[in-house]
Image (tube, rainbow over all chains, first blue to last red; front, side, top):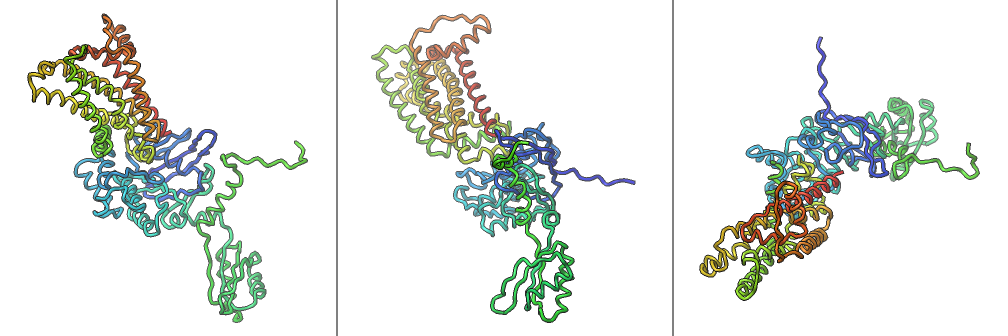
Length: 345
Length: 259
């Protein structure tokens, strides 16, 4: 009997630590990224996202811990890792006085591309990033933010990297430009692994296979959106638009599920209907049972029933809330303030 | 090596397309040409110990503190201001290749300007062969000696400029720092200019080393050796040590910026 060999992860991080002066930026984080995965790196400002990305790009060393990118140990071959990855720095600084094609040409040469392969790769990345001929001949300093961002992404894809690290790739972009960036990642899904940090949660939700939420240098949540929903949001929320008495409605629902609570009651314009929002700790299955029961009661005349899933923003806030409350601004555990008159034990 | 050549080409391209470089080069060469003309005219009536070609070399060396900052101040300071140093370092390139690439570009440009300045006596020789011969412009050893002297000083001066550029984000501060360092260095060396060089015997490596380090104190009088085609290795070594020292500092600074 033969067992199928599991492919090696593109990124393997184990107990990574980094300190800037007195501030502990990373407190021993561990995670891995598989081939072709798109992973979103989330966290509040100062959580350690950019530090992690810069370490994985071989730009700065970690204080301790292990990190392997494309099988290359960062502690031993810091420079070698840059041959396997593409990196888009936060704010995407670019030389203003070069034309797009001149810049890509320069970067391609730096990355060891030459001759026909260099020309071919430049053509491909211009196509992937939708930088048509007119734009490619313009000076970078004259481009809009969206186009500059695309130039940065084109650069990161030049040397056919196995991993592309994007630090806030869509910051300051309009929805159309953000959609183009997402489309680009979709196009390369499965071939290239992406690790991207972003504050735009809806975007991460839309394009990432998995999310890692970082807070105060620690991973506070990790998994697919469904995993995170299960982990952080125990209660299911459902909305009912109906006629009828609120107390009667509550009584019928409570008979089926005692944990169900009415959390909102709003009128629906001038129709006389009301929108009731309920929360239950017994999950979405019980909500369906409730719907069946309510449909049997003619007085309610149900016109809408909707189970609402918690979005990534809710999960993000829940995941980072506890960690945020426990830490001071230097990332240290807060000491409980002594109450006046409290005696030392 | 590949990365070094790519950086060198890009930096040279940057220098060639920068208007500031052309403006600085034009004024520098114009002032040098005026100075050279007056020197040549007054040569017959003054008691100069150096041949006329050496005066041009002296002009280039003493003018370097004004020229070198224009060639080097942009290299790292501008990258740091724009943040492109991080983007540059995200490519597979080492700090040493980066520093050497930028230094080589400014050094080559400096030599190019020196080459243009050397066209003054060359044109004089072509247009007025008799006068040129009287002024010693037909002595090849004077040309070679002067050129080697400029190469040695240009290498160390460019290294000082690159170092100054690596310590700040502000081009003006970088320019002023390199101007100050180079002026200070030349001021110390200039005390000995014109004095009769002491007789030295270099019998072993230790003497050679002492002479190399000692050339800081009595440095510029060695131009008298170079001016007549005598190559003083101690002076060249001294300049190379100085260049190596400042390039090492610049490399360490770039490494430090990444950590």
